[in-house]
Amino acid sequence: MSEVHSKGTSLTELEKAAGEKMSSFARGYYSHPGEGGQTYRDNCQAFKRYRLIPRNLRDVNIRDTSVTVLGSRLDLPVAIAPTAVHKVAHPDAEAATAKGAASMNTLMALSSWSSQSLEQVAEAAPRGVRWFYMLFYRDRGRMKRLLERAERAGYAAIVLTVDQPLFPDSIRRKPASFPVQFSLPNVWIDDDQPGPLGSMEHGAGLAKIAKEAATWEDVKWIKNNTRLPVVLKGILSAEDARIAVDLGVAGIYVSNHGGRQQDGVPATIDVLPDIVGAVGGEAEVYLDGGVRTGTDVLKALALGARCVFIGRPALWGLALNGAEGVEEVLQVLKHELSIAMARAGCAKISDIEPSLVVHESYYL
Ligand code: FNR
Image (tube, rainbow, N blue to C red):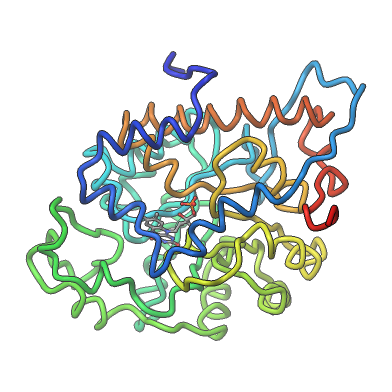
C-alpha cells in the first residue's frame, strides 16, 4: 500500500484538491446534481440528522471492519458505485479504479458506460471483487451475450439500475460536448461498434439498441438468464423492495443516483429503515448517496445496510492520483469508520446495532 494516506485527511479536503485538479468539464459532469439539486444536498445533510448513542466500556482495542457481501469477504463495508466514463477523471480510467479498490480489498461495481471493456477492467485487478451494471437492451440475444461475458470475466453479480427510465441528457447530447475522446466498449457490442465517441450521433444509435423504461418482466428475464446474483440499484420504496425480494433478487441497493435522476426524492438514509423492514432479511440491502465520513458509514450500517457505496468520492480520488487516489479515499473512510466504531463501542461490524442511532426528531 502506498504511503499517501494521511490520517488527518478528510473527503472534504480530497474533494477540494480534486476540484482544483480536474478540468472544468469533469468538475461539472461529476458534481452535476440534476435539476434543482435538492436531493443531492439532502443526501449528505440527512446523515447529520441521525445522532449516535455510543456504548462505553466495551473492549474495542482491536477493531475488525470486514464484512461479507454476497459471499465475498471485503476488508471494509465501503464499495465503489458504478459511475460512467472514468477516462474523464484520469487516463488510466476504470482499470485504475479497479486497482485502487482491489488494493483495499473491496468491491467495485463497473458501469456499462465505462471507457474500458469489462474484460480489460477485470484483467487490471484480477483478484478484485467486481459487479457489472448492465443496461437493459431491446435485443435479448445481446443481453445474453453480455451476461455471459460478465460471467466469463469473473464478475460476481449483475447490477440493474432501475431508477433511470430515460437516458441521461449527457448521453443524448452530441458527442462533441465531451472534451475527452473515449469509446463505450460495453455498450457498443457485436455488430454495432461505432468506434470512439465523436464518430457518430451516439444518442440516436443508443436508442436503437438499448431499452428505456424497463419493467419487472425484464428483471425476471435477466434473473432467469444468468447464474450470477442480481442486485437492483435505485430502489427507494419498501413496496418495490418487496416485489424484488419476491422475485428472488439477491440485493436491494437503496439509491437515488446521487440526486442525478428525479430531484425531490428523499435522502437514501431516510428511506433505508423502511426498506430494511420490508426486506426482512431475505436479501442483502446496500445504500449509496452522500456517504462522506466514517460516521455516515456507521449510521447506514446501524440502520440496516450491509455495506455502502461511494460514487463521486472515488472519482475525486481517481482524478487526484489514479489508483492510489482511489485507495486513499477508501483508506480515509476505513480509518474514520474504525475510529467511529471504537467511540460507539463496536469491535466488529456485527456489533453495529439499530440502537446506536436515533433520528433527531426523537428529541423534538
Ligand atoms: C453516476 N451514477 C451512476 N449509476 C449507475 O447505476 N450507472 C452509471 O453509469 C452511473 N454513472 C454516474 C456518473 C457520475 C458522474 C455520477 C456522479 C454518478 C450514480 C452512482 O452509481 C451513485 O448512485 C451515486 O454517485 C451515489 O452518490 P454519491 O456517492 O456520488 O453521493
